[in-house]
Amino acid sequence: MRSLRRAPLHELDEERLVRLVAKGDRAAFEELYRRTSPWMAVRLRRRCADEQIVAEVMQETYLAVWRAAGAFGGAAVGGTAVGWIWTIAARRLIDAFRRRAHHAKPPPAAATPESAPAAEELALATTVGGEVGDALRRLAPELRQVLQAMVLDGLSVRETSVLLGLPEGTVKTRARRARIMMRSALT
Image 1: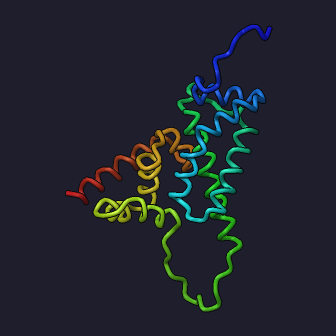
Image 2: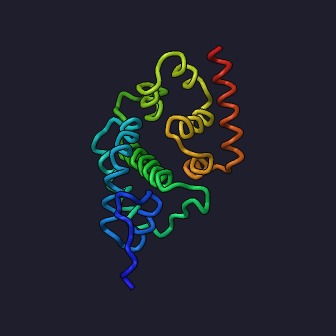
Image 3: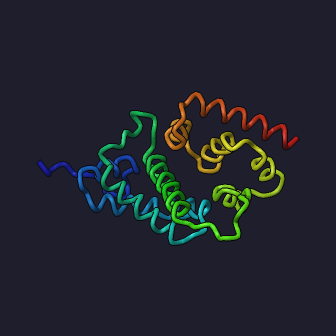
């Protein structure tokens, strides 16, 4: 039954590659990694300056892709392979930030807690500057998260919903409110 010829891996889209990975195809996994790892590393570096954390997140992400490829719903549930992989990576990055925060010990002089910007805010400051960056940083955190995921990271409403653990309607509402507030701040 192996007489059916399959298209060369470089001609397949990412969704088909994930389907092959789910069947244990190492060559398909290597092709998927070759295609997606460069932009994945760039996106992760935008959110985290620590190369060690980025490397760990990359490794954990692709290990999860290898192990969970069979769970990928694909276009049938409104997702894309690239969005699915990014969702895994974003969750791994959040986990890494939580682990780092959990293990970090405050210095003895830190008697009064100061408000320090979150890692995403620091990454945002280096990515988006000027009036747009200022307006974006003035948004409420829940609106900024949605706008970041959808505009800066290019995720769909559904992918943003999965990433943030919110209903799709809430994502749409917050995105609309954020855009209205941004428009108002920039005029």
